[in-house]
Image 1 (tube, one colour):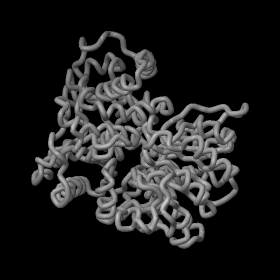
Image 2 (cartoon, rainbow, N blue to C red):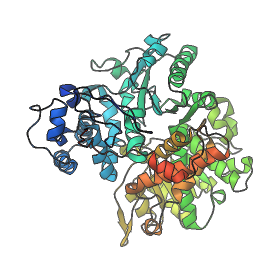
Image 3 (tube, rainbow, N blue to C red):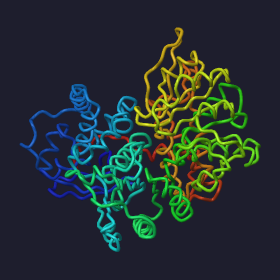
Image 4 (cartoon, rainbow, N blue to C red):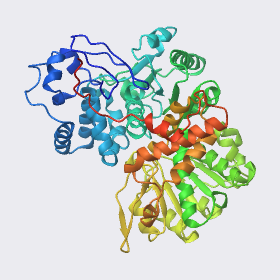
Length: 569
């Protein structure tokens, strides 16, 4: 047999055997084999394999090792200068040789993550129809209404563990990109595999096309979706339900991750389906969990607890209220009442501080944070009035944390917590250099996009990136291993704690609130164990608990190794 659980026969169409936990993959021959990214291994086919599979003469004579293929890939990658070109190169590699793609990414995860996901994926989505070389994932449009079940039934995968689904209405901080937003589910699932070992054959990116309200896309001849305004209200809800329940019915127990839905729908859909299917919203819950993980480490450095802090959020959408809700849950776990905890979180939206006198105009997700306070328009005045210990940016307003804001935070706090979490990079509320410089190196800093190390007064500060990739892959792995029925808020809080526990004294020495991305598979494994333990404790698991849960999680993680040559006698 080989490492993918197959036995290779000398016959033209060999039998296929499947080992437990391995996906069953059909044997291919000739050009079909070379054109299949799951089984193609480029120049690494041995002479015997070339004979067995009928591909002699279709490749140059030399047979190379995986290491040689990685070296060739590295050379080609390094010749490219623009981030978008590197993104396109990596996606083409995935389309050609999936095993080599994941091995290259996993071996260089810190370097590759900004190219396969944020910030580069933002530009890729803006130009998705212009750079698309091969369609990936499932598209269902409102014109398929009433026949979605048959579309899903035709999908070739017999087993899918994780779906990432978007309707493209709020892609990162870039707005309504419609079907161009498919780059987000594709990128997120690349990270499920690279960071947590969810097998790529069991990942499914899905885009729901209900139109777009972006005029430039409707006028773009290369736009890949329906060129009409977005469908809303009952028709929208019925169609989304048809898609979600269709996926759930074909793949029972599947994890469905909501991604980049607009504020109008994100909270509603999460509330509607979280008790029906296994689901979570990464923009609301994943962002909250990774932010809480950074905050737990920040207060650990300060010698305080989350309940001792007061936070102002610049931005009151999905991310802002999601983070606030999870902070409240943590404060309650530390002994505060819900009312006391909410009283330590203040939201600022486009009209200023969220206060009770604005109740009639507030969206429902802001209501819990509408406090008794006089109206305040500017962020600077809000900070002077509230005197927070931390500010969290989720506004997609670049440079809103200016020198006056950051300097005031430093005046009020010995170690101010400054989290500009908006991405891509050009939308960050401030840079790492600005935060460390304006606070004389005292900021406890984390950002949504990566920044280079900063030296202030001779001390090096390594800014931690509050990347959701620390959280959602491990959540998914835990769900798969335990067969989790529902993803709870407590699981998100527990994941945050598990993330913070992976920060070492060496990380703290350089002022970094997160473990290095190079350790992300270890982090995902720890989070998966914690999530699975919580599921077993709360009777939310459908798979019997293994004697050694840690070993079971580790065994479930895919690692890309090429098929080995194999002789059958």
